[in-house]
Length: 431
Image (cartoon, rainbow, N blue to C red; front, side, top):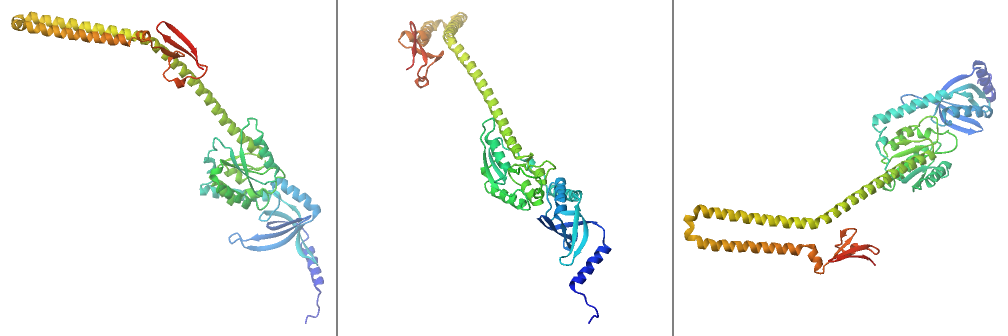
């Protein structure tokens, strides 16, 4: 048995004195947070992992006392835009302490936010590089927002002020345009952001035909706890989503990876609503301009056709007269030509045809009579086709706006029509 024994308290006191003497200074230490418990004082579990196997090779407890923690937390969050959470790499200024009752821990006096920013930037660049290697980083940019983007799937916290602002902006737009937003609730800050937003995307994916575009919004509150939007899994889900995604997650500092892979990034929920209103209003203006151009074109075409029909109706009598004159002249010419040829033939071959003279004269007479009969028939047909004669027989022509009426169903009550008869014109009102 040892000649001298120590109580546990005495041994712990000796350890405390040894640490105080041998390690009187503060040290800057790099570590990863495995647990963070903010209870006024902030209690942390620190860990260091093997680079290749990612298994822990060192662990320690650390504490930042309330009076110091208020300043350290505010400074860290204002610089990095997020709160301390598990998985974050930090650079801590610590002093080794040992308490007889509570054991060993590190007392934290400061945290360097620039170190964490560098680690965050490195992780972000690694995610971007992996997305680019997979060929999905720009996939959302290749999707076109539909012209009539009115059916909107919204991923947001149901109680967030930003969601209410978004809906109010859509409902009260100055153009009176109608939108149909549907909320898919999700947790929009903290460690559950990634899985919650992915679950909402999966729910939308089951009803793709019901929506034109997806909007992910997060408004109001501090800009802390944004790390959930900088994850590889969420970025892959957004990049590969078949509908255009608009993000407005309400932070000014830097684009998150989610913003980078989305189709369109705006700053706030109200800006997302304004973007959709502006997009649809531009489509509406294009439709109105096309409508005006079409109406103008149709009006000009109708006026042209109306004038053309009026000119044709004026030309019909003259065309009949011209046709009759041309036919008479043609028949006269045929008769003269025929007579000339017969006479020439008779004169040149009279000595050969003397025996047939009687037969030829008879034949010529029959032919002449036949031609005359044809002429008389043509004259009679032309006479019967004369519109004026049709009017004298008791027929009439009904016109509306200068055009002949062929279908009674085309006339409506109140139309003024004109009826032409042989000796004048009658105007009537349809009842």
